[in-house]
Image 1 (cartoon, rainbow, N blue to C red):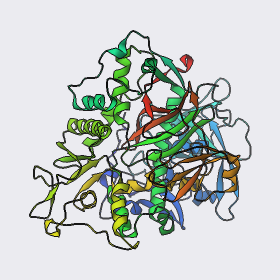
Image 2: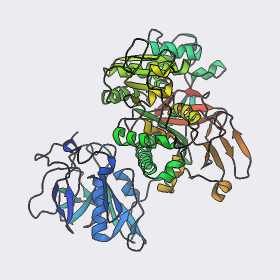
Image 3: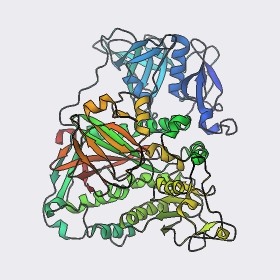
Image 4: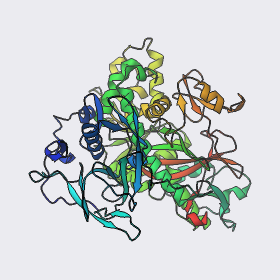
Amino acid sequence: MSHVLKFPPEPFGTVLGHAPGGVAIYSSHYASVDEAQYPDRDAYRSVLDGIYMGHKWQCVEFARRWLYLNCGYVFDDVPMAYDIFGLRHVVHVADGRRLPLQSFGNGSQRPPEPGCMLVWEEGGEFEVTGHVAIVTAVLPDRIQVAEQNVEHSRLPPGQQWSRELPLRRTARGGHFIDAAYPDTRVLGWVIQTDDARHAHRHRAVQSGLAELNSRFAPREGQHARPWLDTREPAQAAFVRAMGGHRLTQHEPVAEQYRYFRLSEYTQAQLRRATNELHLMFMHATEVVLEDDALLERFRIPRSLWPRLRKSWTQRRGQMISGRFDFCVSERGIKVFEYNADSASCHMEAGLVQGVWARHFGVTEGEDPGALLGAALIDAWRRSAVEGVLHIMQDNELEETYHAEYMQAAAVAAGIPCRVIRGVSGLSWNAAGDIVDPHGTPIRSVWKTWAWETALDQIRAECEHDDSQPALHTRASSGAAPRLVDVLLRPEVMVYEPFWTLIPSNKAILPVLWQMYPEHPWLLHAQFELTDYLQQHGYVSKPIAGRCGFNISLVDRHDTVLNETAGRFDEQDQIFQELWRLPDIDGYRTQVCTFSVGGRYAGSCVRVDPSLIITTDSDIMPLRVVGDADL
Protein backbone atom coordinates (compact mmCIF):
# COMPACT_ATOMS: atom_id res chain seq x y z
CA MET A 1 0.00 0.00 0.00
CA SER A 2 1.50 3.34 -1.00
CA HIS A 3 1.57 6.15 1.53
CA VAL A 4 -0.65 9.17 0.75
CA LEU A 5 0.96 12.48 1.67
CA LYS A 6 -0.97 14.70 4.06
CA PHE A 7 0.46 17.82 2.43
CA PRO A 8 1.72 18.67 -1.06
CA PRO A 9 5.33 17.45 -1.39
CA GLU A 10 8.17 19.94 -1.43
CA PRO A 11 10.66 19.73 -4.33
CA PHE A 12 13.57 17.34 -3.99
CA GLY A 13 16.34 18.76 -1.78
CA THR A 14 14.13 21.30 0.05
CA VAL A 15 14.99 21.62 3.75
CA LEU A 16 11.83 20.44 5.52
CA GLY A 17 13.03 21.25 9.04
CA HIS A 18 15.74 20.36 11.53
CA ALA A 19 16.16 17.47 13.94
CA PRO A 20 17.88 17.86 17.34
CA GLY A 21 21.40 19.16 16.90
CA GLY A 22 20.35 21.31 13.98
CA VAL A 23 20.54 18.42 11.49
CA ALA A 24 18.67 19.27 8.30
CA ILE A 25 15.88 17.01 7.05
CA TYR A 26 15.58 17.11 3.24
CA SER A 27 12.75 16.28 0.87
CA SER A 28 13.39 13.13 -1.11
CA HIS A 29 10.50 13.62 -3.52
CA TYR A 30 12.34 12.06 -6.48
CA ALA A 31 9.53 12.83 -8.94
CA SER A 32 10.45 16.52 -8.70
CA VAL A 33 14.20 16.15 -9.26
CA ASP A 34 15.75 18.86 -11.42
CA GLU A 35 17.86 16.80 -13.82
CA ALA A 36 20.00 19.83 -14.64
CA GLN A 37 21.00 20.00 -10.98
CA TYR A 38 21.29 16.21 -10.63
CA PRO A 39 22.57 15.03 -14.03
CA ASP A 40 24.13 11.76 -12.87
CA ARG A 41 24.57 9.44 -9.89
CA ASP A 42 27.58 11.35 -8.60
CA ALA A 43 25.33 14.34 -8.00
CA TYR A 44 23.31 12.23 -5.53
CA ARG A 45 26.31 11.43 -3.31
CA SER A 46 25.97 13.08 0.10
CA VAL A 47 29.44 13.80 1.50
CA LEU A 48 30.19 15.70 4.71
CA ASP A 49 33.75 16.53 5.84
CA GLY A 50 34.98 14.07 3.20
CA ILE A 51 32.89 11.23 4.66
CA TYR A 52 30.24 9.53 2.54
CA MET A 53 26.86 9.82 4.23
CA GLY A 54 24.69 8.06 1.65
CA HIS A 55 22.40 8.64 -1.32
CA LYS A 56 20.52 11.95 -1.25
CA TRP A 57 18.09 12.12 0.52
CA GLN A 58 17.31 8.64 1.71
CA CYS A 59 16.64 7.40 5.22
CA VAL A 60 20.07 5.80 5.69
CA GLU A 61 21.80 9.03 4.66
CA PHE A 62 19.91 10.96 7.33
CA ALA A 63 20.63 8.40 10.07
CA ARG A 64 24.35 8.35 9.32
CA ARG A 65 24.55 12.16 9.06
CA TRP A 66 22.62 12.65 12.32
CA LEU A 67 24.91 10.27 14.22
CA TYR A 68 28.01 11.89 12.77
CA LEU A 69 26.96 15.45 13.64
CA ASN A 70 25.60 14.64 17.10
CA CYS A 71 27.76 11.73 18.25
CA GLY A 72 30.88 11.83 16.10
CA TYR A 73 30.54 8.28 14.86
CA VAL A 74 29.21 6.55 11.72
CA PHE A 75 28.10 3.02 10.90
CA ASP A 76 29.48 0.95 8.05
CA ASP A 77 27.83 1.13 4.65
CA VAL A 78 24.79 -1.15 4.38
CA PRO A 79 22.99 -2.44 1.28
CA MET A 80 19.52 -2.08 2.86
CA ALA A 81 18.13 -0.02 5.72
CA TYR A 82 17.02 -3.17 7.56
CA ASP A 83 20.66 -4.34 7.65
CA ILE A 84 21.31 -1.67 10.29
CA PHE A 85 19.58 -3.97 12.78
CA GLY A 86 22.37 -6.49 12.24
CA LEU A 87 25.27 -4.05 12.75
CA ARG A 88 27.53 -4.67 15.73
CA HIS A 89 29.64 -1.51 15.89
CA VAL A 90 30.09 2.08 14.80
CA VAL A 91 33.37 3.86 14.09
CA HIS A 92 34.34 6.99 16.02
CA VAL A 93 35.60 9.26 13.26
CA ALA A 94 38.11 11.28 15.31
CA ASP A 95 40.22 8.32 16.47
CA GLY A 96 38.95 5.27 14.53
CA ARG A 97 37.72 3.46 17.67
CA ARG A 98 35.02 0.87 17.21
CA LEU A 99 32.14 1.32 19.62
CA PRO A 100 29.63 -1.48 20.27
CA LEU A 101 26.06 -1.40 18.96
CA GLN A 102 23.29 -3.46 20.49
CA SER A 103 19.98 -4.28 18.79
CA PHE A 104 16.75 -4.65 20.77
CA GLY A 105 13.76 -6.34 19.17
CA ASN A 106 10.38 -4.64 19.13
CA GLY A 107 8.82 -5.59 22.47
CA SER A 108 12.15 -5.63 24.30
CA GLN A 109 12.34 -4.91 28.02
CA ARG A 110 14.96 -2.28 27.24
CA PRO A 111 13.08 0.77 25.99
CA PRO A 112 14.08 2.88 23.01
CA GLU A 113 15.88 6.10 23.94
CA PRO A 114 16.55 9.43 22.26
CA GLY A 115 19.31 9.15 19.68
CA CYS A 116 18.81 5.46 18.94
CA MET A 117 17.96 4.17 15.47
CA LEU A 118 14.52 2.69 14.87
CA VAL A 119 14.61 0.05 12.12
CA TRP A 120 11.77 -1.37 9.99
CA GLU A 121 11.73 -4.70 8.18
CA GLU A 122 11.25 -4.64 4.40
CA GLY A 123 7.68 -4.81 3.20
CA GLY A 124 4.63 -2.69 2.48
CA GLU A 125 5.48 1.03 2.50
CA PHE A 126 9.14 0.07 2.89
CA GLU A 127 9.24 -2.63 0.23
CA VAL A 128 12.67 -4.15 -0.53
CA THR A 129 14.81 -1.79 1.54
CA GLY A 130 13.18 -1.40 4.95
CA HIS A 131 13.52 1.94 6.75
CA VAL A 132 15.45 3.67 9.53
CA ALA A 133 14.63 6.74 11.64
CA ILE A 134 16.22 8.49 14.61
CA VAL A 135 14.25 8.48 17.85
CA THR A 136 14.16 12.06 19.15
CA ALA A 137 11.91 11.67 22.20
CA VAL A 138 10.31 8.86 24.23
CA LEU A 139 7.01 9.77 25.89
CA PRO A 140 4.73 7.58 28.05
CA ASP A 141 2.46 6.52 25.19
CA ARG A 142 4.38 7.41 22.05
CA ILE A 143 7.75 8.15 20.55
CA GLN A 144 8.84 10.89 18.17
CA VAL A 145 11.19 10.20 15.26
CA ALA A 146 13.10 12.26 12.70
CA GLU A 147 13.57 10.74 9.26
CA GLN A 148 13.85 11.22 5.51
CA ASN A 149 12.10 9.59 2.55
CA VAL A 150 8.64 9.19 4.08
CA GLU A 151 6.93 12.60 4.22
CA HIS A 152 8.14 15.34 1.87
CA SER A 153 6.37 18.30 3.51
CA ARG A 154 7.72 21.03 5.79
CA LEU A 155 7.62 20.58 9.55
CA PRO A 156 5.75 23.12 11.68
CA PRO A 157 8.02 25.88 13.04
CA GLY A 158 10.09 24.67 15.99
CA GLN A 159 9.10 20.99 15.58
CA GLN A 160 12.15 18.70 15.61
CA TRP A 161 10.47 15.43 14.71
CA SER A 162 8.82 14.01 11.59
CA ARG A 163 6.24 11.57 12.98
CA GLU A 164 4.86 10.20 16.24
CA LEU A 165 4.38 6.47 16.67
CA PRO A 166 2.28 4.76 19.38
CA LEU A 167 4.26 3.10 22.19
CA ARG A 168 2.68 0.58 24.55
CA ARG A 169 3.94 -1.51 27.44
CA THR A 170 3.36 -5.24 27.28
CA ALA A 171 2.21 -7.41 30.17
CA ARG A 172 5.77 -8.70 30.59
CA GLY A 173 7.33 -5.29 30.84
CA GLY A 174 8.27 -4.95 27.19
CA HIS A 175 8.04 -1.93 24.94
CA PHE A 176 6.22 -2.23 21.62
CA ILE A 177 6.14 0.39 18.85
CA ASP A 178 3.35 0.44 16.28
CA ALA A 179 4.79 0.35 12.72
CA ALA A 180 2.10 2.87 11.60
CA TYR A 181 1.64 1.68 7.98
CA PRO A 182 -0.12 -1.51 6.84
CA ASP A 183 2.14 -4.44 5.92
CA THR A 184 5.13 -2.93 7.75
CA ARG A 185 6.93 -4.18 10.85
CA VAL A 186 9.34 -2.50 13.23
CA LEU A 187 12.31 -4.80 13.81
CA GLY A 188 13.44 -2.83 16.85
CA TRP A 189 15.93 -0.18 17.90
CA VAL A 190 19.72 0.01 17.77
CA ILE A 191 21.64 1.69 20.59
CA GLN A 192 25.35 2.45 21.02
CA THR A 193 25.99 0.83 24.40
CA ASP A 194 28.18 -1.77 26.11
CA ASP A 195 25.15 -3.14 27.95
CA ALA A 196 23.91 -6.22 26.08
CA ARG A 197 21.13 -7.12 28.55
CA HIS A 198 17.90 -7.87 26.63
CA ALA A 199 19.76 -7.40 23.33
CA HIS A 200 18.44 -9.26 20.30
CA ARG A 201 19.96 -12.65 19.56
CA HIS A 202 19.68 -13.73 15.94
CA ARG A 203 17.61 -16.85 15.56
CA ALA A 204 19.52 -20.05 14.99
CA VAL A 205 18.34 -21.82 11.87
CA GLN A 206 16.69 -25.14 12.64
CA SER A 207 18.85 -27.97 11.38
CA GLY A 208 17.89 -28.99 7.87
CA LEU A 209 15.96 -25.86 6.87
CA ALA A 210 18.87 -24.50 4.85
CA GLU A 211 19.40 -27.79 3.04
CA LEU A 212 17.97 -29.07 -0.24
CA ASN A 213 16.60 -32.52 -0.92
CA SER A 214 15.00 -34.30 -3.85
CA ARG A 215 11.98 -36.50 -4.46
CA PHE A 216 10.30 -38.23 -7.37
CA ALA A 217 6.95 -37.42 -8.92
CA PRO A 218 4.49 -40.35 -9.10
CA ARG A 219 5.54 -42.53 -12.03
CA GLU A 220 2.55 -42.97 -14.33
CA GLY A 221 4.25 -42.85 -17.70
CA GLN A 222 4.10 -39.06 -17.93
CA HIS A 223 7.56 -38.86 -19.48
CA ALA A 224 6.36 -40.69 -22.59
CA ARG A 225 3.66 -38.12 -23.36
CA PRO A 226 4.35 -34.64 -24.83
CA TRP A 227 3.98 -31.94 -22.21
CA LEU A 228 5.28 -28.77 -23.85
CA ASP A 229 3.21 -26.76 -26.32
CA THR A 230 5.18 -26.86 -29.59
CA ARG A 231 2.75 -24.41 -31.17
CA GLU A 232 4.44 -21.76 -29.07
CA PRO A 233 7.86 -20.78 -30.61
CA ALA A 234 9.91 -20.74 -27.41
CA GLN A 235 8.61 -24.13 -26.25
CA ALA A 236 9.09 -25.63 -29.71
CA ALA A 237 12.69 -24.37 -29.72
CA PHE A 238 13.21 -25.86 -26.26
CA VAL A 239 11.96 -29.27 -27.39
CA ARG A 240 14.39 -29.16 -30.35
CA ALA A 241 17.30 -28.20 -28.09
CA MET A 242 16.55 -30.98 -25.59
CA GLY A 243 15.76 -33.61 -28.20
CA GLY A 244 12.28 -34.15 -26.83
CA HIS A 245 9.87 -33.17 -24.08
CA ARG A 246 12.32 -33.29 -21.20
CA LEU A 247 13.98 -30.95 -18.73
CA THR A 248 17.03 -33.08 -18.00
CA GLN A 249 19.36 -35.14 -20.18
CA HIS A 250 20.15 -37.51 -17.32
CA GLU A 251 19.35 -41.19 -17.61
CA PRO A 252 17.76 -43.51 -16.60
CA VAL A 253 14.16 -42.54 -17.30
CA ALA A 254 13.50 -42.26 -13.56
CA GLU A 255 15.49 -39.03 -13.52
CA GLN A 256 12.78 -37.37 -15.61
CA TYR A 257 10.62 -37.62 -12.47
CA ARG A 258 13.09 -36.11 -9.99
CA TYR A 259 12.58 -32.67 -8.52
CA PHE A 260 14.33 -30.69 -5.80
CA ARG A 261 12.82 -29.13 -2.70
CA LEU A 262 13.67 -25.96 -0.79
CA SER A 263 12.18 -24.66 2.45
CA GLU A 264 10.13 -21.47 2.68
CA TYR A 265 12.68 -20.17 5.18
CA THR A 266 15.56 -20.61 2.74
CA GLN A 267 13.50 -19.17 -0.11
CA ALA A 268 12.92 -16.04 1.99
CA GLN A 269 16.65 -15.80 2.70
CA LEU A 270 17.46 -16.16 -1.01
CA ARG A 271 14.98 -13.43 -1.84
CA ARG A 272 16.61 -11.11 0.68
CA ALA A 273 20.11 -12.09 -0.45
CA THR A 274 19.24 -11.39 -4.10
CA ASN A 275 17.87 -7.92 -3.36
CA GLU A 276 20.72 -7.07 -1.02
CA LEU A 277 23.49 -8.42 -3.24
CA HIS A 278 22.19 -6.58 -6.28
CA LEU A 279 22.64 -3.29 -4.43
CA MET A 280 26.03 -4.40 -3.11
CA PHE A 281 27.22 -5.23 -6.63
CA MET A 282 25.90 -1.88 -7.86
CA HIS A 283 27.75 -0.03 -5.11
CA ALA A 284 30.93 -1.95 -5.93
CA THR A 285 30.48 -1.10 -9.62
CA GLU A 286 30.36 2.59 -8.74
CA VAL A 287 33.50 2.25 -6.62
CA VAL A 288 35.36 0.55 -9.49
CA LEU A 289 34.32 3.14 -12.06
CA GLU A 290 35.61 5.91 -9.80
CA ASP A 291 39.04 4.31 -9.33
CA ASP A 292 41.37 3.89 -12.34
CA ALA A 293 43.61 1.46 -10.43
CA LEU A 294 40.67 -0.82 -9.71
CA LEU A 295 39.25 -0.49 -13.20
CA GLU A 296 42.62 -1.54 -14.60
CA ARG A 297 42.10 -4.91 -12.89
CA PHE A 298 39.12 -5.62 -15.16
CA ARG A 299 41.27 -5.65 -18.32
CA ILE A 300 38.88 -3.53 -20.33
CA PRO A 301 40.63 -1.47 -23.05
CA ARG A 302 41.25 2.06 -21.80
CA SER A 303 39.70 3.47 -24.95
CA LEU A 304 36.34 2.17 -23.71
CA TRP A 305 36.51 3.60 -20.18
CA PRO A 306 34.67 6.83 -21.11
CA ARG A 307 31.90 4.80 -22.76
CA LEU A 308 31.71 2.57 -19.70
CA ARG A 309 31.38 5.49 -17.31
CA LYS A 310 28.86 7.21 -19.55
CA SER A 311 26.79 4.03 -19.68
CA TRP A 312 26.75 3.88 -15.86
CA THR A 313 25.83 7.54 -15.54
CA GLN A 314 23.03 7.47 -18.10
CA ARG A 315 21.69 3.92 -17.88
CA ARG A 316 22.20 2.91 -14.26
CA GLY A 317 18.54 1.92 -13.86
CA GLN A 318 18.02 0.21 -17.23
CA MET A 319 19.20 -3.30 -16.45
CA ILE A 320 16.52 -5.87 -17.32
CA SER A 321 17.70 -9.06 -15.64
CA GLY A 322 20.65 -10.92 -14.16
CA ARG A 323 21.25 -14.23 -12.39
CA PHE A 324 22.97 -14.98 -9.09
CA ASP A 325 24.61 -18.36 -8.52
CA PHE A 326 24.42 -19.59 -4.91
CA CYS A 327 25.62 -22.46 -2.80
CA VAL A 328 22.87 -23.40 -0.35
CA SER A 329 23.73 -25.92 2.37
CA GLU A 330 23.70 -26.49 6.12
CA ARG A 331 26.70 -24.12 6.24
CA GLY A 332 24.57 -21.24 5.01
CA ILE A 333 24.01 -19.32 1.78
CA LYS A 334 27.00 -18.04 -0.21
CA VAL A 335 27.04 -16.29 -3.58
CA PHE A 336 29.56 -17.40 -6.19
CA GLU A 337 29.01 -14.62 -8.74
CA TYR A 338 26.51 -12.34 -10.48
CA ASN A 339 25.76 -12.94 -14.16
CA ALA A 340 24.55 -9.40 -14.79
CA ASP A 341 25.23 -9.54 -18.54
CA SER A 342 23.41 -11.99 -20.82
CA ALA A 343 22.37 -14.46 -18.13
CA SER A 344 20.70 -17.69 -19.22
CA CYS A 345 18.14 -20.14 -17.73
CA HIS A 346 15.22 -17.68 -17.66
CA MET A 347 12.91 -19.92 -19.67
CA GLU A 348 13.70 -23.04 -17.66
CA ALA A 349 12.93 -21.21 -14.42
CA GLY A 350 10.06 -19.04 -15.58
CA LEU A 351 8.13 -21.50 -17.73
CA VAL A 352 9.42 -25.04 -18.15
CA GLN A 353 9.68 -26.12 -14.50
CA GLY A 354 6.10 -24.96 -13.90
CA VAL A 355 4.75 -26.82 -16.94
CA TRP A 356 6.73 -29.90 -15.83
CA ALA A 357 5.12 -29.83 -12.37
CA ARG A 358 1.60 -29.63 -13.78
CA HIS A 359 2.20 -32.47 -16.27
CA PHE A 360 3.94 -34.76 -13.78
CA GLY A 361 1.33 -34.15 -11.06
CA VAL A 362 3.55 -32.44 -8.50
CA THR A 363 1.30 -30.26 -6.37
CA GLU A 364 3.27 -29.86 -3.16
CA GLY A 365 4.75 -26.47 -2.46
CA GLU A 366 5.04 -23.66 -4.99
CA ASP A 367 6.84 -23.00 -8.24
CA PRO A 368 9.62 -20.47 -7.42
CA GLY A 369 9.71 -19.27 -11.02
CA ALA A 370 6.00 -18.64 -11.44
CA LEU A 371 6.31 -14.83 -11.36
CA LEU A 372 9.48 -14.49 -13.43
CA GLY A 373 7.68 -14.03 -16.76
CA ALA A 374 5.43 -11.29 -15.36
CA ALA A 375 8.45 -9.54 -13.85
CA LEU A 376 10.21 -9.53 -17.23
CA ILE A 377 7.14 -8.11 -18.95
CA ASP A 378 6.98 -5.34 -16.35
CA ALA A 379 10.71 -4.62 -16.78
CA TRP A 380 10.29 -4.25 -20.53
CA ARG A 381 7.30 -1.94 -20.01
CA ARG A 382 9.56 0.26 -17.88
CA SER A 383 12.42 0.17 -20.37
CA ALA A 384 13.33 3.04 -22.65
CA VAL A 385 12.85 1.03 -25.86
CA GLU A 386 11.27 2.96 -28.72
CA GLY A 387 10.46 1.32 -32.03
CA VAL A 388 11.65 -2.18 -32.88
CA LEU A 389 13.69 -4.20 -30.37
CA HIS A 390 16.17 -6.41 -32.23
CA ILE A 391 16.87 -9.71 -30.49
CA MET A 392 20.42 -10.72 -31.48
CA GLN A 393 21.68 -14.29 -31.06
CA ASP A 394 23.98 -16.92 -32.47
CA ASN A 395 22.32 -19.68 -34.44
CA GLU A 396 22.41 -22.12 -31.51
CA LEU A 397 19.47 -24.10 -30.17
CA GLU A 398 19.87 -22.96 -26.55
CA GLU A 399 20.15 -19.31 -27.57
CA THR A 400 17.11 -19.71 -29.82
CA TYR A 401 14.66 -20.70 -27.09
CA HIS A 402 16.20 -18.13 -24.74
CA ALA A 403 15.74 -15.42 -27.39
CA GLU A 404 12.17 -16.55 -28.16
CA TYR A 405 11.26 -16.48 -24.47
CA MET A 406 12.63 -12.97 -23.99
CA GLN A 407 10.97 -11.83 -27.21
CA ALA A 408 7.61 -13.05 -25.91
CA ALA A 409 8.05 -10.96 -22.74
CA ALA A 410 8.95 -7.84 -24.73
CA VAL A 411 6.03 -8.33 -27.13
CA ALA A 412 3.67 -8.78 -24.17
CA ALA A 413 4.98 -5.42 -22.94
CA GLY A 414 3.91 -3.83 -26.23
CA ILE A 415 7.36 -3.71 -27.87
CA PRO A 416 7.62 -4.93 -31.49
CA CYS A 417 10.54 -7.35 -31.87
CA ARG A 418 12.59 -8.93 -34.59
CA VAL A 419 15.07 -11.81 -34.08
CA ILE A 420 18.44 -11.68 -35.85
CA ARG A 421 20.59 -14.80 -35.94
CA GLY A 422 24.24 -13.91 -36.43
CA VAL A 423 25.35 -10.73 -38.18
CA SER A 424 25.71 -11.92 -41.77
CA GLY A 425 22.34 -10.41 -42.75
CA LEU A 426 23.21 -6.92 -41.51
CA SER A 427 24.17 -4.12 -43.87
CA TRP A 428 24.63 -0.34 -44.11
CA ASN A 429 22.13 2.10 -45.51
CA ALA A 430 22.91 5.36 -47.28
CA ALA A 431 22.73 7.32 -44.01
CA GLY A 432 25.39 5.13 -42.41
CA ASP A 433 22.97 3.19 -40.21
CA ILE A 434 23.29 -0.54 -39.62
CA VAL A 435 20.06 -2.11 -40.83
CA ASP A 436 18.48 -5.54 -40.50
CA PRO A 437 17.58 -7.70 -43.58
CA HIS A 438 14.28 -5.76 -43.84
CA GLY A 439 16.11 -2.44 -44.05
CA THR A 440 15.06 -1.33 -40.55
CA PRO A 441 17.76 0.66 -38.72
CA ILE A 442 18.91 -0.99 -35.50
CA ARG A 443 18.29 1.29 -32.52
CA SER A 444 17.52 -1.07 -29.59
CA VAL A 445 19.10 -4.48 -29.02
CA TRP A 446 18.72 -7.30 -26.55
CA LYS A 447 21.49 -9.84 -27.02
CA THR A 448 22.35 -13.35 -25.95
CA TRP A 449 26.02 -12.58 -26.60
CA ALA A 450 28.16 -11.42 -23.69
CA TRP A 451 29.76 -8.00 -23.92
CA GLU A 452 33.09 -9.80 -23.63
CA THR A 453 32.51 -11.29 -27.10
CA ALA A 454 32.48 -7.78 -28.56
CA LEU A 455 35.52 -6.81 -26.50
CA ASP A 456 37.46 -9.73 -27.91
CA GLN A 457 37.10 -8.15 -31.37
CA ILE A 458 38.43 -4.86 -30.01
CA ARG A 459 41.33 -6.50 -28.16
CA ALA A 460 42.34 -8.26 -31.35
CA GLU A 461 42.54 -4.94 -33.19
CA CYS A 462 43.96 -2.60 -30.54
CA GLU A 463 47.70 -2.95 -30.12
CA HIS A 464 47.83 -0.50 -27.22
CA ASP A 465 45.48 0.06 -24.27
CA ASP A 466 44.80 3.64 -25.31
CA SER A 467 44.05 2.81 -28.94
CA GLN A 468 40.67 3.89 -30.25
CA PRO A 469 38.40 0.95 -31.12
CA ALA A 470 38.39 0.38 -34.87
CA LEU A 471 34.65 0.69 -35.45
CA HIS A 472 33.31 0.59 -38.97
CA THR A 473 30.94 3.46 -39.66
CA ARG A 474 29.40 3.03 -43.10
CA ALA A 475 29.31 0.92 -46.25
CA SER A 476 32.09 2.98 -47.83
CA SER A 477 34.48 1.38 -45.33
CA GLY A 478 34.27 -1.74 -47.48
CA ALA A 479 33.56 -3.98 -44.49
CA ALA A 480 30.33 -5.66 -43.48
CA PRO A 481 28.94 -4.72 -40.05
CA ARG A 482 30.34 -6.76 -37.19
CA LEU A 483 28.89 -7.43 -33.74
CA VAL A 484 31.10 -4.77 -32.18
CA ASP A 485 29.97 -2.20 -34.77
CA VAL A 486 26.36 -2.73 -33.66
CA LEU A 487 26.84 -2.88 -29.91
CA LEU A 488 29.16 0.10 -29.53
CA ARG A 489 27.37 2.55 -31.81
CA PRO A 490 26.26 5.57 -29.69
CA GLU A 491 22.78 5.59 -31.22
CA VAL A 492 22.13 1.91 -30.34
CA MET A 493 20.69 1.16 -26.90
CA VAL A 494 21.82 -2.32 -25.83
CA TYR A 495 20.41 -4.57 -23.11
CA GLU A 496 22.04 -5.39 -20.88
CA PRO A 497 23.80 -1.98 -20.73
CA PHE A 498 27.55 -1.73 -21.29
CA TRP A 499 28.26 -1.09 -17.60
CA THR A 500 27.10 -4.64 -16.73
CA LEU A 501 30.59 -5.69 -17.81
CA ILE A 502 31.74 -4.64 -14.34
CA PRO A 503 29.46 -6.65 -12.01
CA SER A 504 29.72 -9.66 -14.35
CA ASN A 505 33.51 -9.63 -14.22
CA LYS A 506 34.95 -11.87 -11.47
CA ALA A 507 37.33 -9.04 -10.55
CA ILE A 508 34.35 -7.51 -8.73
CA LEU A 509 34.50 -10.29 -6.11
CA PRO A 510 37.69 -9.12 -4.32
CA VAL A 511 36.34 -5.56 -4.43
CA LEU A 512 33.13 -6.68 -2.71
CA TRP A 513 35.08 -8.58 -0.06
CA GLN A 514 37.15 -5.49 0.66
CA MET A 515 34.02 -3.33 0.91
CA TYR A 516 31.97 -5.81 2.95
CA PRO A 517 34.44 -8.02 4.84
CA GLU A 518 32.89 -11.07 6.52
CA HIS A 519 29.49 -10.35 4.99
CA PRO A 520 27.38 -13.50 5.46
CA TRP A 521 26.43 -13.79 1.76
CA LEU A 522 29.99 -13.37 0.45
CA LEU A 523 33.00 -15.65 0.09
CA HIS A 524 36.51 -14.47 0.89
CA ALA A 525 38.04 -13.34 -2.43
CA GLN A 526 41.38 -11.79 -3.39
CA PHE A 527 43.33 -10.76 -6.48
CA GLU A 528 46.33 -12.76 -5.25
CA LEU A 529 46.57 -16.19 -3.66
CA THR A 530 46.95 -15.52 0.06
CA ASP A 531 47.99 -17.74 2.96
CA TYR A 532 44.40 -17.70 4.24
CA LEU A 533 43.04 -19.05 0.96
CA GLN A 534 45.74 -21.71 0.74
CA GLN A 535 44.96 -22.82 4.28
CA HIS A 536 41.20 -23.01 3.67
CA GLY A 537 41.10 -24.09 0.02
CA TYR A 538 40.34 -21.89 -2.94
CA VAL A 539 38.88 -21.63 -6.42
CA SER A 540 40.75 -19.86 -9.20
CA LYS A 541 38.50 -18.17 -11.79
CA PRO A 542 39.28 -16.21 -14.98
CA ILE A 543 38.03 -12.68 -14.46
CA ALA A 544 35.84 -12.64 -17.57
CA GLY A 545 35.20 -16.37 -17.86
CA ARG A 546 31.82 -17.91 -18.65
CA CYS A 547 30.10 -21.29 -18.72
CA GLY A 548 32.32 -22.74 -15.98
CA PHE A 549 35.42 -22.74 -18.22
CA ASN A 550 39.01 -22.67 -16.88
CA ILE A 551 38.07 -23.05 -13.22
CA SER A 552 40.24 -24.93 -10.70
CA LEU A 553 39.17 -26.11 -7.24
CA VAL A 554 42.03 -26.70 -4.80
CA ASP A 555 41.57 -27.90 -1.22
CA ARG A 556 43.63 -26.94 1.84
CA HIS A 557 45.97 -29.86 1.19
CA ASP A 558 46.81 -28.37 -2.23
CA THR A 559 44.92 -31.19 -3.95
CA VAL A 560 43.14 -30.24 -7.17
CA LEU A 561 39.55 -31.42 -6.65
CA ASN A 562 38.32 -30.50 -10.10
CA GLU A 563 39.22 -28.27 -13.01
CA THR A 564 37.80 -27.40 -16.38
CA ALA A 565 39.38 -26.43 -19.68
CA GLY A 566 38.19 -23.71 -22.04
CA ARG A 567 39.08 -20.59 -23.95
CA PHE A 568 39.87 -18.32 -20.98
CA ASP A 569 43.19 -19.86 -19.93
CA GLU A 570 45.16 -16.70 -20.76
CA GLN A 571 43.01 -14.38 -18.64
CA ASP A 572 43.93 -12.94 -15.26
CA GLN A 573 42.57 -14.94 -12.34
CA ILE A 574 40.94 -14.12 -9.04
CA PHE A 575 40.94 -16.45 -6.04
CA GLN A 576 37.79 -17.22 -4.07
CA GLU A 577 37.38 -19.29 -0.93
CA LEU A 578 36.48 -22.92 -1.64
CA TRP A 579 32.85 -23.61 -0.81
CA ARG A 580 31.74 -26.96 -2.17
CA LEU A 581 28.30 -27.46 -3.63
CA PRO A 582 26.27 -29.94 -1.58
CA ASP A 583 25.82 -33.47 -2.89
CA ILE A 584 22.07 -34.09 -3.17
CA ASP A 585 21.40 -37.68 -4.19
CA GLY A 586 24.41 -37.80 -6.49
CA TYR A 587 24.05 -34.27 -7.88
CA ARG A 588 26.14 -31.27 -6.93
CA THR A 589 23.39 -28.69 -6.69
CA GLN A 590 23.54 -24.93 -7.22
CA VAL A 591 20.61 -22.59 -6.65
CA CYS A 592 20.17 -19.73 -9.12
CA THR A 593 18.05 -16.67 -8.44
CA PHE A 594 16.96 -14.04 -10.94
CA SER A 595 17.07 -10.31 -10.35
CA VAL A 596 14.69 -8.36 -12.62
CA GLY A 597 14.86 -4.60 -12.42
CA GLY A 598 17.10 -5.07 -9.38
CA ARG A 599 14.63 -7.21 -7.41
CA TYR A 600 14.22 -10.92 -6.78
CA ALA A 601 11.97 -12.55 -9.40
CA GLY A 602 12.47 -16.33 -9.25
CA SER A 603 14.67 -19.37 -8.61
CA CYS A 604 15.81 -22.64 -10.16
CA VAL A 605 18.50 -25.27 -9.58
CA ARG A 606 21.37 -26.41 -11.78
CA VAL A 607 22.97 -29.79 -11.14
CA ASP A 608 26.04 -31.71 -12.19
CA PRO A 609 27.86 -34.88 -11.07
CA SER A 610 31.01 -32.75 -10.67
CA LEU A 611 31.80 -29.86 -8.32
CA ILE A 612 31.72 -27.32 -11.16
CA ILE A 613 28.54 -26.15 -12.88
CA THR A 614 29.15 -25.61 -16.59
CA THR A 615 27.11 -24.73 -19.67
CA ASP A 616 26.37 -28.46 -20.06
CA SER A 617 24.98 -28.85 -16.52
CA ASP A 618 21.32 -29.73 -16.24
CA ILE A 619 18.43 -27.80 -14.78
CA MET A 620 15.94 -29.81 -12.75
CA PRO A 621 12.55 -28.72 -11.34
CA LEU A 622 12.51 -26.90 -8.00
CA ARG A 623 9.64 -26.58 -5.53
CA VAL A 624 9.40 -24.45 -2.39
CA VAL A 625 7.70 -26.29 0.46
CA GLY A 626 6.65 -25.37 3.98
CA ASP A 627 9.35 -25.58 6.64
CA ALA A 628 7.49 -28.33 8.46
CA ASP A 629 7.19 -30.34 5.24
CA LEU A 630 10.85 -30.28 4.19
